[in-house]
Amino acid sequence: MSIPPDRASGEEAFLRQFMAEERALLRFILRYVPSIADARDVLQETLVTLWAKRAEFDAAREFLPWACGIARFKVREFWRKQPRWEALAHDDFMTLVDQSREELAPELSVRAEKLRECVAKLPAEHRATLDRYYREDEPVETLALREGRSVDAIYKTLQRVRRSLLECIERGLRSEGAAT
Image (cartoon, rainbow, N blue to C red; front, side):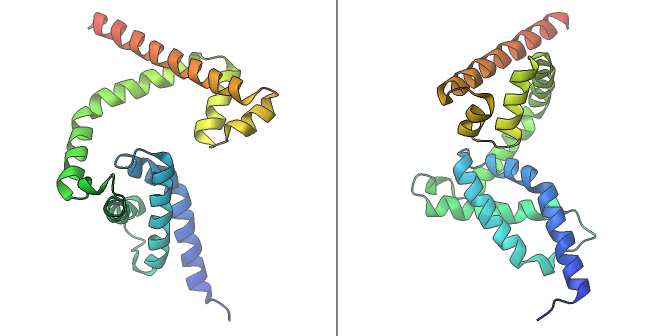
């Protein structure tokens, strides 16, 4: 059984859209589900639903808002299924999170800029380790093998670098506050 060419190209375009927005969709889910493992589960459930509804997607519209709408339902579904999250499974909580995020947006934006500045000041090997761990989702065990170091040494390095970044960000915010 062969797939008609127009359907195949539509599915390919759909997959390309999803792959391009996957990290943004995961970040969206992490607003409501702070555990990365749980958020990845919700992302997977979202992907399954997105794929099932791919024929409903209007290519003239933006993909991410549509995908986030589906992810919202999957987050609520996750909350209802998890005893520790069940109390959050209502629209008011999601609205509260969204409002708080909107109120904090200017501060978060300044902090994100300071973080970029501080990361740029790190030694190249620390930047590479952070990049592999956070952007490429490389496990600590793989990093340890790659760098010829122990798993504990990688964890300690990540801990020190995170602490250093936090201190750098706070220094930058204090100096900026003093300058204004």
